[in-house]
Amino acid sequence: MAMGYIQAGQENSFGCERMRKGLEYQYPLIAQLRDAGRIEVATLGETGRCFSARHRLTPATSVCALEDWRGCGRESIWYMSRFGRINLSREQDGTLAIRDWQLNSEKYAEPFLDKTCRTSGCTYCALPVCDGMRWECRMAFIADGVPLKTRFRQPETDGADTLRTDTADGKMTLTLCNETLDIVHHYGSFSLRMERRKDGGCFWRLHDKRTLEYEYDAVRYRLRATGAAIDLLDENRFTIHAAESRFQLSAEVI
Image (cartoon, rainbow, N blue to C red; front, top):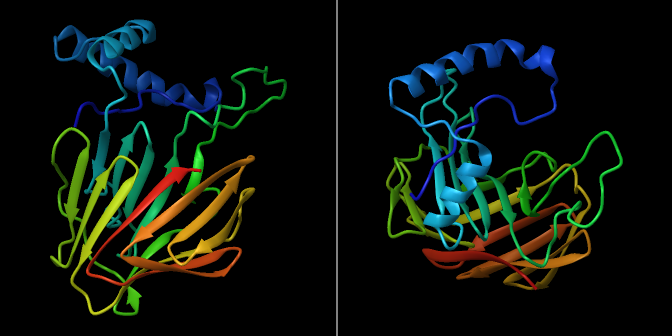
């Protein structure tokens, strides 16, 4: 898509001793690529000015990892846009799921935009629809009553903002575009099942059979289903049942 992102160094506060070996390995390789003319090394400020000159709005981007370097069979497809991000994952046991879905909004300011962080640590968050890390959960794909086990095919782009991938069995197509996930399936029955172990301060309630309303950090937003129905089981579990072979999920701030 418009751009990609690879982390060089570490993005967390691990400290020099824990990062030293990694940095001493990475930086000489970066210098070799720079000296060979294969990459350009720039300051963060220079990079930001270049990016702003090329893009009036934050473009959609993707990072796809369909080969597991550990040989465990995991796969991951990240789709990011100015509206948020979605991560499709294949777990070690072969099951497919949505591992992460975060919503961006101008109505939700970062926690230290207008105040100083006065503690030894800080957390930056978006508005979670599914937070696989903090909630310890997945939004699992269920086909014909059992967890769907297959692989993702290499995604393809369709225009500047759209990413599409099929499953290896040829029975499901996923299309990601801004804040919307479009699903076409060819199973007898199909659903998505969410069950979280922690709520992370995020609460939800069923507004109607097609709308689940969330509240996080005093911001209200919702997950809407078209061509599907949402069944809220309790404060930590819900299921989305496809009523048609094609249905759509979208997230937005209220």
